[in-house]
Length: 254
Ligand code: NDP
Image (cartoon, rainbow, N blue to C red):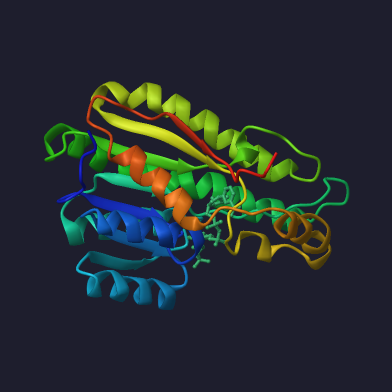
């Protein structure tokens, strides 16, 4: 039996675009109060207004999670505003593709900073609150959902450092799951295949022309809502059931 999220507080990173927007909407529809974290505050404010108009509860929180102080402040602001934290969705991410030979090192650093360090900073800051929620919150269970990727399961030529970050997220997730699961903080990865978002648009034109656009033209990709469905599924399991891994692909993506 699924549980609803009334009374729970969720923090979604990367809530200004794509999967994060759809996830925040769905968690709010299921009754959670949702902290919307990203850098583009105009978008966060618009989403917050939309959620509130639909009868939900949301808070826009500006943060660049690659800055440890800002990641910690985002968690703190959420807990100060809503009084607790039950669910963390580590969704913010960046995918910059291309060969390793002659690579733009600055692109590597930006990806590592968001996909790895940002996720670590946010998780570390959230854990004491999640452990408390699991102990004495109404659900007596808490959740971390890390948005990894099929690129955390399979390596491809040209995906090197993105693969590195997402394989890393998968390993970290399972290690943390083992550390806290018996204290009823459930930790899982969700690994999407291609989703229709802005993710590919941050790449250099030659990468977009050769690696991104041909894939999107040839594939009926997922909608962000398909991944939000997966997050909702994970966080609404009964207390005794933990989803460690969920892999969601477009049907026609090999
Ligand atoms: P989008 O580019 O649409 O969204 C990325 C989000 O991350 C934005 O809200 C952006 O907000 C946020 N973000 C980026 N950098 C930072 C930062 N420094 N601090 C805070 N927030 C940041 O991409 P998706 O929705 O597709 O991506 C979400 C996740 O899904 C990523 O982890 C991605 O790797 C993963 N994924 C996506 C797939 C796809 O095909 N789209 C497939 C598999 C996995 P802002 O710029 O306002 O800060």
